[in-house]
Length: 146
Image (cartoon, rainbow, N blue to C red; front, side, top):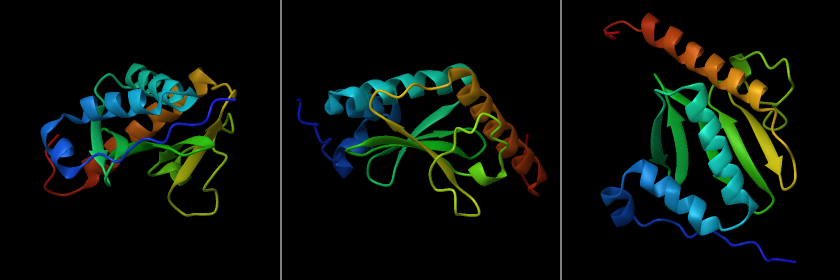
């Protein structure tokens, strides 16, 4: 049985000089196990669902995907890859992907464990819905330019 590799935290210096995309590449490589593979796969699906997505690196080492606000974060833990949608409680989830952080009024998350499969079509639909929600909120804010 292969022992999980824990990703090291990036230093402030590394975060200040490398692009968020490079830092996410580094995280995927550091993990070196199923979690890195899953994070890479999720990242690809996010980019397919929203080609205009912007990658960010926040909170001392969390990959974040944004479009008119945060769409979701991709955190890695020992047992799960957690995809947290910033405004998930406001999104319809007909496929029932959300399986974590269900008690809050704002966020919702998807915990993916080793060996689990992802409903790619449903995940892309959820990502597009989050982008649409962010865009609708951005248009309503006074002083915001399209």
